[in-house]
Image (cartoon, rainbow, N blue to C red; front, side, top):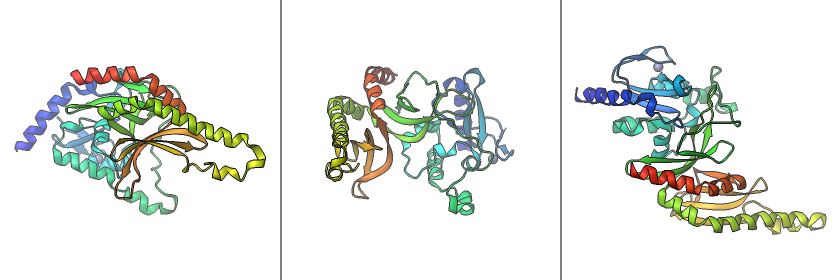
Length: 313
Ligand SMILES: [Zn+2]
């Protein structure tokens, strides 16, 4: 009884601030429904006080919410793949789900566990072709123009920097975004990494070192190219292989910035490494092209301003 009361109170709070407060970069919401509503997937009722996962549709004054039972969400939501993965951290959930912090702890845990579960139904039926979305799923459109909110900055090609506050700390996240069908506002996906403000400062401080590493690795490629046909043998010796030439900066014990060549272009990769697999890259991270890295550098002042504003809240 106590719990349902608590849920109703929380709904009220959520409802008052409802669409005005939904961060446009957050694709999903989680909340306890104030009044019963209908699940868009199974057409059955979601009872008052029960957990509802919402998909934020449309934008501006046309913003609306598709409601799902949590089990229906993982089965039917067309954008579920943007949050389904085994190695998601809590900060990613905070970034993707509006209202996540306000949930009861066992519901948060349930959501985190559900995101890790393999999509059993599809897996069994379509093992030979991997995971397939059902026929009714619409897909996100990549590229083109997109809108972002005040604390999100574009690095091009739907990779964005997003500054947000969670509890007492402010984080700077570098993440892939997607553009939902019929919308121009881009929304966050699971792919990316949330840096603490201290780690972000380290990135800023090390930018000159990263720049020279990029230059060096970019040039080593040019050199190899310029040698032309008579030096084919040397290609392998001279770091022609992507793994051989790599410069690494440390952000924390398990978090690194690596500069290496990917598809023949030098890239900046910010990633977590796992102790368990003797410091092989873990899933969490983002790879920036040289253009995106330069864009990031040019946005340092804007990002820092957002960090300051959010720290004051
Ligand atoms: Zn349902």
